[in-house]
Amino acid sequence: MKTILIKEPGKVVIEEREKPVRKPGEVLLKILYGGICGSDLGTYRGTFAYASYPKIPGHEFSGEIIEIDENDRGLKPGMVVTVNPYFNDGTCYSCQRGLLNCCEHNETMGAQRDGAFSEYVTVPIERVYDGKGLPAKTLALIEPFCISWHGVSRANVKEGDKVLVVGAGTIGVLAANAAKARGAEVYIADIAKEKLDYAVNTFHLNGAILNTSAEILEEEVRRITNGNGFDVTIEAVGLPSTFQNCIDAAAYGGRVVLIGVGKKNLDFNFTIIQKKELNIFGSRNALKKDFLELIDLVKAGKVDLEKIVTNTYKLDDAQKAFKEFSENAGSMLKVVIDFTK
Image 1 (spheres, rainbow, N blue to C red):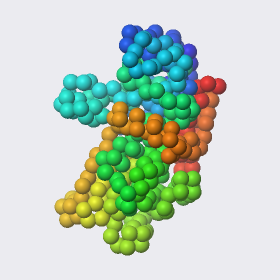
Image 2: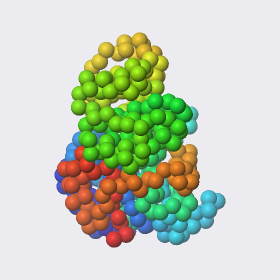
Image 3: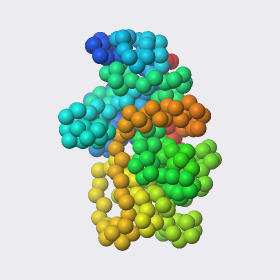
């Protein structure tokens, strides 16, 4: 089978490897579609905090069940499914309390362990979720939507909230969609005007802020919120400056969610947290319930996930996909690899 491998920063190759052999309790999947995540792009660029080499990328994917044991979940060969790619140890304090998404020794496919960007993979059956008839490309987008949905859930976004999402990449745009689905008034900020225009026009958000300076952001936040600040701010970039944006833009008594992953420190006057009595939430990975809720939400037609996809490449064009995404990240939103061609 063909496997996509990031051998070192900037170098993607396609290798021929043996097709995996399924063990008891595992499912053999034929991969159909896979999305290139920001962490995959970071691994390609050499900037991802958890990157090591060589690495098979990919944790956003859909597949067809080829082989599976008898099971009580109704999963059968031929079904198109998606997968929870976060592997928890089951024994740490977080896992003991049911917080599997923030396992102290978590290994995410494509990050701490090899990912799914091969023609075939095996995964534990308990991580496989029935796609309920959704298209394979849509199912490959469920995992990133789960990341965003989990963050929005952490902030308990509700109808009538004014929400600012900082970052108009895939996770940010999906966070905006998640907040909108909960009845919030949603605005999005970024330095890339093309991405902002696409997000607002495609998903009918309430507005956008071209975040070219802290002063402009402050002025726009004041205008949009009548000087009150946002009820919820969501950081979906992973930079010190954008986290500071979220602290500054939040209302007194507001909620701040950090989804973005970064490697740099932020030096700031932390007393603002006390002064505003801010509620600050970290958001990591997602839970089984997030996957199940979103498959139903998308099935019900509440969000057209495929509109997030701006570029699709064939498996054999993987090097081109990563290179062009890296060079054009300001205009390309979600990049998908079609393993069926």
